[in-house]
Image (tube, rainbow over all chains, first blue to last red):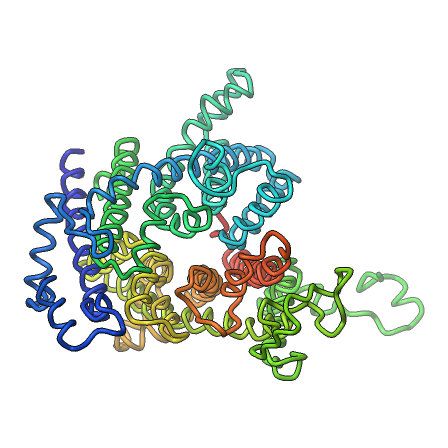
Length: 305
Length: 311
């Protein structure tokens, strides 16, 4: 197990390094950061000045190495627009996004796991169909449009929920639903498939033969085993959701990392954009690593590979 | 139904009815497939809606009652025909610049389909190449491709797309290329495992024994047998690309005004959500219908061609 954990850790670090190179190159090589910073009215001299002040005149590899060494120590440079430390702003906004992500995944669980279980114990019935329909519809619904529809009905017409800001927990309901429903189809399908597989297994038949109550079989024996891959998948989906939160945070004016990313893109604030992409990518890498470890811990067969 | 050698045949002197080929033989595989395809509700509905949208998009210049970019500030925000103040001149009303909403919706279908299709082609070429190489050669190649896939998955798609588009500048084709370069991961993952399933089968070994080149084996032995999976992923990724374009345009960094992109129309309408929510409702419903149709088609094709992959 330790061997496997270390090997996977090595890969994860390599992936993180590659991501940092890709991010840095994407943002530096696809355009001239100095020109973007200077604006349309700048003269050639202004741009040259900016290039020197921000160090954009140095060779690309030197810029990257300098950025990476500082980033590893938690120093992402200064924001071009806010003129403060990027790291301070990013870690100030991060908790809000985490709360949003956690609420969203909780909503996804509440909706998808019962539906998945129900679809599995009553296959090919109305429940199964309903669950499948919900999955198909959910995957086709554009999240920003769904969010606007909720704002219109729940926020404006019926005045049930606040439509923007982060003052109370009620502010997080609509954003969590808008962000979370998108991952429900995947979680539901996996719960259903897992339950179907477990329910057909020998130990469930044995448990039934022993006369254990159906409820106990379902929850103590079946669900507990079927849920393992779901937990692993959820870790990965959580990572995706943090990336997707930019749309939802912008719509609901939630002052998190996604909203910050959108603002920074509007302001061409390169150091901020880099830091956010890197932080989110690293978060995803850590989550997938933990999911892998969980799977390997629970299923020894994986460790050999 | 008269039995083939029944007494009636002998008695009346009529021609004995011979067993018809249909009753003995199973229907041909092609016929079975046809029957499954046309009998599948998802495929029928999905393909029907999609073909309708494609036809409307192709015939846009004929069907659209007005020029989608033509502004008329004296005719701003006319509600659609089902409202009390609506009129048949502008069936779906007009937006805040007085542009005919139906015409914009029709031309918007072209943008969505174009972006979805071309981005899917680009990502399909990248993902299939990587996936097939990894699946066929295995070993080091597989390791490297897996690493590239993991790296790509770690990058948040929308964020990277927004950032890159904001730096390079945004035109329709830049959006298409950026999306194409970002969403190839599912192609690679599915193609890799599909190739792994067929690469050790007898017919591939036979082709190797005959001395076929690697290119030939991949193109004429392996590809025809995994093309089903490729088509399924292609439909789902096309839907994915369409949704991403809409999200980018909604955030103001996709297709630029005054082009009639559905995502952009929703974005332009959001300021009027209080009094004229139909400005958001109409393009959103169109987007939803298009993506749903493509997904139904893709899910249906998977059911029909590879029922074992349903879960």
